[in-house]
Image 1 (cartoon, rainbow, N blue to C red):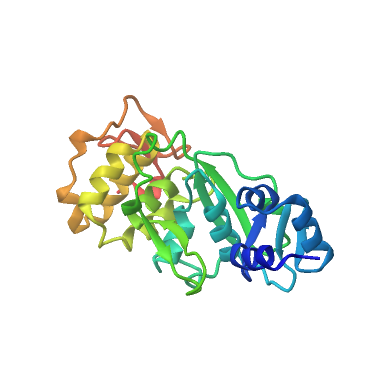
Image 2 (cartoon, rainbow, N blue to C red; image 1 turned 45 degrees about the horizontal axis):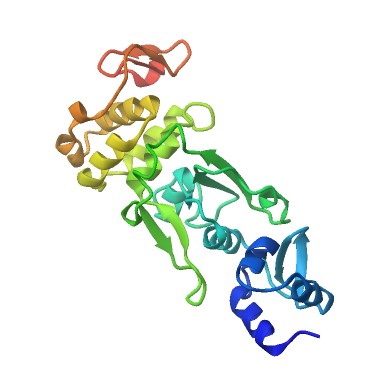
Length: 259
């Protein structure tokens, strides 16, 4: 039997469309005995060992990520191409319709994340070589996707942060051409926010590539940036194999994009 007070608590902790781990539920005051009885009583269903949802609940990627962000002590955000998509700034995909969600965190991913049986895949990006610690974890560098009025929002990077995150994957999983088309659409970025982000980034490649792409499109915000304040490192970076060296930023870029 489930006592009434704990059952009400469970309803609050695990509403429809959200998930919870056994560890987190215990931290919220529920006993192992109660959790086991909730499973036996078909109130909770086991998604993978130690991870639960309401028995009749439907899983979505937003519910999974909102749950992960709610339970995590570390900063976990939707970023890169996925964040640009949520802003309507990505190409090729309908806004919010994602088959692959990019997550950025300085912590390792939970082992259960890719085992929940949803069609959406999750790609985890470590941020320890991308950002100075704590410099970009403030609320001003994130936005909220209110996907259900009564449920926690999905937290995602602002476009200024998302594009720098994305550029760290060029050309491995994002092509120069795709990055160029994305940059073309970013005419309304905040130079003040960009200034902080470019100072906080520890990715030499991302910063050089950002400045090169920004120069190609000469957006209005570009003239307000202060490159002298950003650490661009030293030496050449070969980003495009067999490409042409851009002497302004010391990176090799595709031949067809070097003019």
